[in-house]
Image (cartoon, helix red, strand yellow):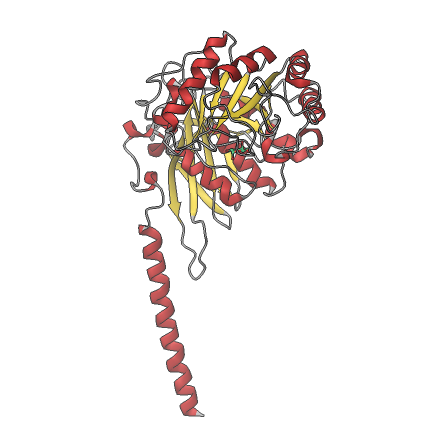
Length: 443
Ligand code: GLA
């Protein structure tokens, strides 16, 4: 018996040592994995925090996209199951819910609006079963509500759902869109015949310009050739990522990829990490709130991707938060500055391996020295997140008043040096920071 006990004690001691070594190695690995470029330095030098150098080198210059586009897109919820009734009812719902007044004005058809073949004259034609009245009639209806109509095509032989693409038909198709009164084109990347995006996207820009009708040009080449580096002389926005889906993993990954290009976005041309999934059911209320807050802070297009005819009160509460929308639309005049991930902290939970370790501070500049700050808890349990003034480019003695944009209330009148908040798992808090020398009235 004593021997058995002795063996047990030895086994226990060995197990404890092995466990300790395992946990320490996890901790060490956890700290050295290069998870995000901005996480390498403890605090970045202030001059690098709001990097203005890359924005506005070119600019397409069609006068659109002074602020990132807002509206609705059919793909995330409806996929190919669209028809003119759904689109008309969506336009009606944008008006009746008040969303249109808040800025959601583009009603954007995605893939599957056209017949699978061009007509005998080589022209695109609307699907006769689902859009029997045609696109012109739909545009007229949408315009009669004070809204704008968007359409979709592809810089390839076919769209992703294998409808005719516009590659080598740019002029004809742009003329069709203009003659129908279309206000916006999303231009996809499927069946691209291996031709570089830099060669396939400008011809449609030129064709759209040649129509004389002003059409918002939204590039969707999924970030494959780093469009932030070249697309602002081509279009008004460019997708930076693959397709989002309605999950926390996809949403967070999409945000991180988009963040890399933050310093390239500004009035006239915006990074596009894809339409919103808020309201589609795959994430919790807090996850959707974080999704919306981060998209607003990154100045991403706010294109609602749910069925706005039947949304829940929670969905409406999220997408109608006027203070968060104001962050999305506000920017620093003259210069545009980096908005995105500023700081993050690894928190180690001994013995438990979390798939996501981050307690993050995201921030973006507003007019004068105001800034939007999001404390985003990407861990699976609640945590305290601290925004340090040094990280945000503020002098540590600066007194800052802090308004919580989800509670719609000031949470501090005079914070100095840092601000901390307890944030639930997968949730975020969003604030406007106003240095005491400034008035609070404008963004
Ligand atoms: C691609 C795009 C999506 C959507 C679909 C439509 O996957 O990236 O946003 O437009 O095609 O088929």
